[in-house]
Length: 235
Image (cartoon, rainbow, N blue to C red):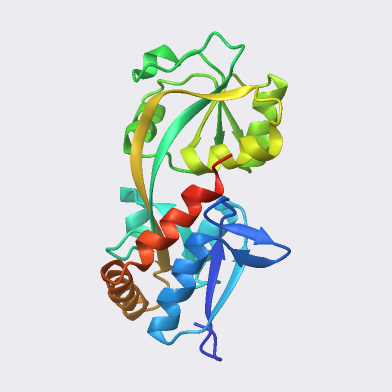
């Protein structure tokens, strides 16, 4: 933590949950983080970085934490996870309406598609395990979700996997002609977390965050902010 006591967090732009408004962090998940640290009595400074850089920064201790990220065994060894998640979300496949690829719940139905993914992003235990086992031989990597949606629109990939509400936000912004749709059931419902560095003792931050989140759940704050995200993506 900085000498001035400010907690430094890296964040991933993940609208409608987390949004970079000209350098100012906004969105319902940002509101949850701000409120949690307000209850903890800790001032915050939030900066936006790509996933790979954010993970390297928090692992090195150049920032105190990062949000949001999914829990994996590898990450638990190098990062400190609180017990309480920040976000629960459905991950779904997006395809162009004129594509013959359709996801039916079985990865085999989409395995031969060129699937866009973000570098070092987890899409839940089920998808990540299938990826490690070589179930998707034609993955196309990029550093940003925006790039992948544009690749899908341009036909450079056949499908992409993304949080349902995040994908709907991109569709509203990038696909006014309505060429992209969700295909099939969710791949998985996942939890995403804030994480803290292990380069120094952040156990008090993690414990305080858990206590604040539990209080916010009990007083209805979490439910209210989650509803804000859902409403923002409605046409």
